[in-house]
Amino acid sequence: MQPKTQDNIYKAFIGEAKAYFRLLAYAEKADEEAVPQIALLFRAIAEAERVHATRQLNLVKDLIVKDTDTNLEESFQREKSISENEYPDFLKTAEEEGEAAAALAFSQARDTEGFHAKLYERAIMHVIKDEVKAYHVCQVCGYVTDKKIPKKCPVCGAPEEKFKTIGS
Image 1 (cartoon, one colour):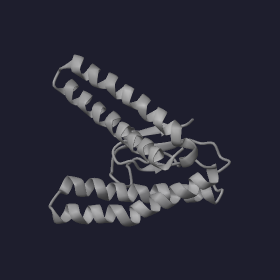
Image 2 (cartoon, rainbow, N blue to C red):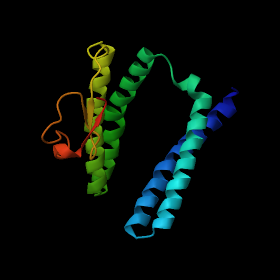
Image 3 (cartoon, rainbow, N blue to C red):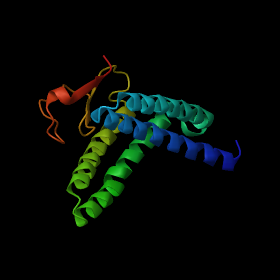
């Protein structure tokens, strides 16, 4: 694929993925405002945007998705970088600007990204590579564990019923 087209496909993928989540948020708001037909419309268009994003991702998938070991290493490096570099900067700005809710979101995201990096690192070291197990994801902050669901999330304090199990 030619470089400009490849760049455009990737940008389109990002835009469509963002639109998907934005439209789902719009649908939730329409539900809250008791406008079910509009909520349904937003969900239908969100699904269409998901289709677009999937098609575009498939066009550049071979350029983005490598072998599993490389994907693990790249994922580990990204999580480490964002938790150590980007989120601390975001957090500092939010605190300076007195944006408490954003600061909390950035702080918790920073902390959970660190846990994600550790899970990737364990996979790279083959500690969990051959084990098939479930992961538990806090639906409040995004903390992930491969251990038993905690009574309270160690990052945000959410109760165990706020965890979603991925896997068996």
